Image 1: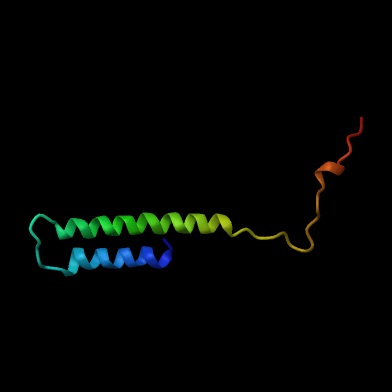
Image 2: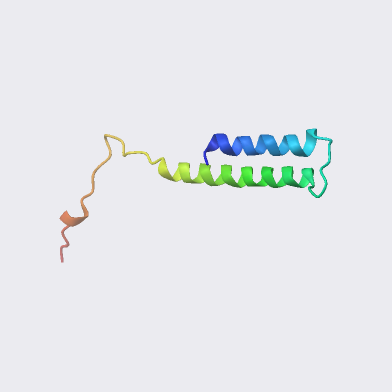
Length: 75
């Protein structure tokens, strides 16, 4: 589920919670909306944290390159 799906869950949940005034027998529409908003927030936070981890910056061109295998130890 991407960012669009998470925002969609948030929007539909908010509409069900705050804008709908009809009731269904056996289903609490407000609770369903709140659950959808919570799932959307959790999904959005998870997606953003994974996306943040994947976005790594390459070293700058002037940065020194350290080769660990070429390190010599002197006594």
